[in-house]
Image (tube, rainbow, N blue to C red):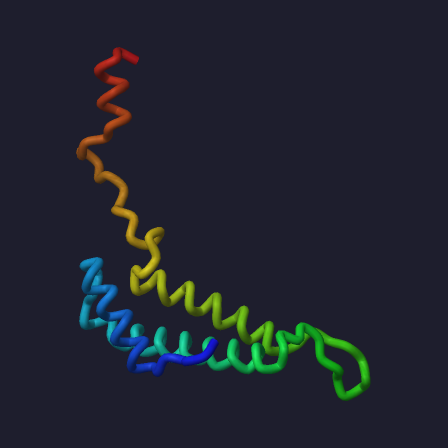
Length: 117
């Protein structure tokens, strides 16, 4: 990873994407800031792990091998990013329309009624 975007550029790009999808709400700016900060931290840790040569194990102070703590940090940040992106409706899965309301049209029920089932 050569260039790590700034938090401000992450916010600006995300806000632009949200506006394009029609899901931007100014009241989400605080969550957007937390999201940008989390993504920025992820990029920094990813870069540090890359610079270390993607080491998955490190030597502890007791001369034993253990899992690199950066991997746990990266996984935690990944989960946080997914959770925040769902809150901001960045993922297609989070933008799925609400289920039909009672009394609304339901294609399956209409089909079954018309076919006499």
